[in-house]
Length: 450
Image 1: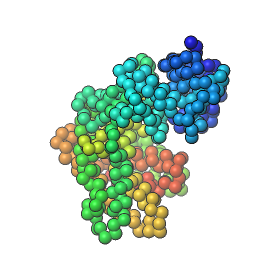
Image 2: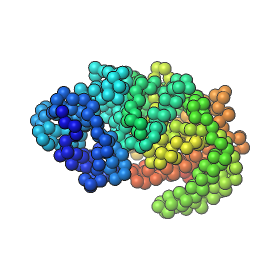
Image 3: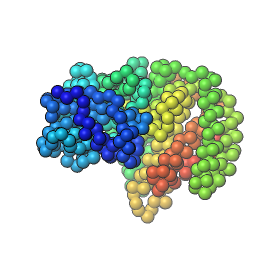
Image 4: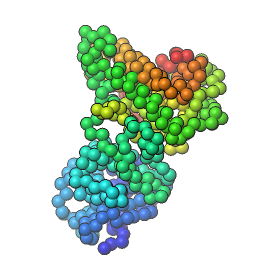
């Protein structure tokens, strides 16, 4: 039995890495910068039928790959259409991403769970970002982390902590695979038959936009207002659970965090305005002065950090919250830092705005501009329903700033999110820049007074 993954196949890893969506680079790294720091034979049925786990150091970043090995030329129909998942051939065998191989994926579950979990069927989820997700028997979903960082993975840490304090709106944790330094995989109950919040919002918008005889979103057949209100209540429950699990930040810590946030806004507004040819900083002077006058932004807790309609799912049992890793474009230290609950609240409000505009873009017809008032009406209706559902929670007031500064604090976090979105759209989707820019201009005009 071989003690090491074939060295000739290790030499093929740079090209393989560059083809993966979860790899941070866009070009193959130099071979000298790819080092196998750990390897483990997870399963074997002989020298030419195996599954290996490799931990790679790639120019100082750590990645996990799980690869299958089988005889060169042996049929592997599951790889059809997935050429980027093949590492290559050497020494009479070829290597490939094991998550596409149903047999090896089931062996992976057994390895990750220490033999406590098994399955008869598996299927990889199509969407990938910084991880790969595999569904087993439509009852368990395993997230295999690809880009590893020392310490607890935020999604694993927060989901487990919320479940431990009795927050019922996360999928039950079932598997945690950890090697002492890194969280390698995390398995949870699979929410079969659930609908993503984003999809439900778009369905509501299509119904409203396609019903010109309906005067308000509340009168449309697909009104989302009731669900938005229930989601607000679940969000309040989540925040109270996070406070119970992780505690509350000290006032001094929150004052420092708030000062840093406000100080960052001016520079970011200036940079965005320079790029767009607009004086965004000048337009925001009144707002920035208002924010600088806030001395106490209220309590700070651990928050979700990337809260939007794509991170919640509606099932027959109600809303569930997913994926607590935080915004991928921000450092982990920033993602795990306590913040006002308004960071999550405004994240959801921004998502409602994005949904209303995305549904207009979908139409691709000449009446796009004429539909903007309807989009604003839908956004306002569901924004109000979400906020009312949140604020009506009998215990959530303990997490909110004082009433006289609450509007300003909420505006600061919404502006922070808009600028984050603007940076993203300028880099990846320039045709979408108008969405965060529209919201940013409305916030600046409001001056932070609600």
